[in-house]
Amino acid sequence: MWFVRLLSSSIGKKLIMAATGLLLVLFLITHAAGNATIFMSSDVFQSYADELHSHPLIVLVFSFSLLLIFLCHIVAGLYLFFENRKVSHSRYEVTTRVVKNSFASETMPYTGLIVLLFLFVHIFGFTFSPKDVQISVTVKELLGNFFYALFYIFAFVALTIHLSHGFWSMLQTFGINHPRYNTLISRLTLGIPLFFLLIFGGVALYFMTGLGAHY
Amino acid sequence: MSSINLTLKIWRQQNSDALGRLETYTLDNVNTDMSFLEMLDVLNEKLTKESKDPVAFDHDCREGICGMCGAIVDGVAHGPEKEVTLCQLHMRHFKDGDSIVIEPFRSRAYPIKKDLLIDRSALDRIIQAGGYVSVNTGGTIDGNAIPISSQKAELAMDAAACIGCGACVASCPNGAAMLFTSAKISQLALLPQGQVERKQRALAMVEQMDKEGFGNCTNAKECEAVCPKGISIRNIARLNREYLLAALTEG
Image (cartoon, rainbow over all chains, first blue to last red; front, top):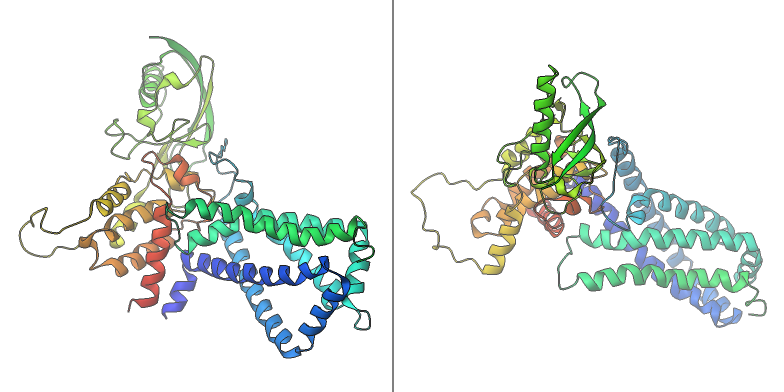
């Protein structure tokens, strides 16, 4: 079958990573847009959340699609990680990396795992939070905790590092690499992760520092 | 002309089944005008005179165009100089008293035959899977009969500069052969002569690449950084496009 051959090939597995990665970035943009309402006031944020959850079917279908995308990204990522680990990093007595700034590309599986760990904490804290407490109260309570917020910021830094290789890598896997656009791509590869860090990290910092005490 | 004294740590391995180890040799008065391979020649002469087994290493043209030579020098394929093969690396780039670690190119797909000598026939089998243009009949066609834009010709030539030394695989953290395969696919995919077998070629060469046990590309860019011919990873992007298109539409 043509798609079995495609998906079982080395390039096919990379395409799964790239395609699901793109969808996850798009999800993060919608998530960041929603979260940005926190900076306006608790009422705006609460009405946004209420509006969203007044259409339970949208939330349900969206959540399950997202779960599927995440699973594909994680399973393909783990498969590639273990397959590549067979090529030992210590195959040479002396190993010198020639490429500068290779930290992000070397640590992709690990930054990915940190984001996954964060996801469990985040879903447990917010998605399955007590239904009788308003979400605008929960966010202030949870992120008002210094160490909880610190963990969030740590995870967002990991996400930023993950995307600072991932975004470019995704376009390369899709075959998008052209001298005319490469400068733009390298700027986006820095800008998009920093945008997420600014919004998501900003929310955590907002409550952590007490700025959002009366939001 | 100046000369330097070196300590060499070289991987010695009797055959593909034997266990290897690094052995230390001292080599004095190395002429800095010598190439790296000439330095190894001098060492081998010395070893032979001492009735020891000389170091086996790959070499052929010694002018950087054949793709036979290559070793990992202090952790970098083809040594510290950019865009040169090992035979074009000169001893003037080293200092007196330097200690140099020399290891063979390593990959799951490259069995070590002896010392620094490796079997790179896995790369040949990727070419055999589809890295050619079939011409089954007729005489030689006039070179200018098919118009090709100079931009396309240049890009194809850049890809065709690959000499198949295998440094990309040896330096890839995952042991992937993507830069090699992408160069070989690009040089034909860009030209009109390569169009007939274009899709078949992309599918067959990638399938062979996977079968040989090469790793998965994680876009670490190490291959591009050590390539003695400066092959760009833009070719890998082209290979990804070629493969996706072929997988979606062929057959």
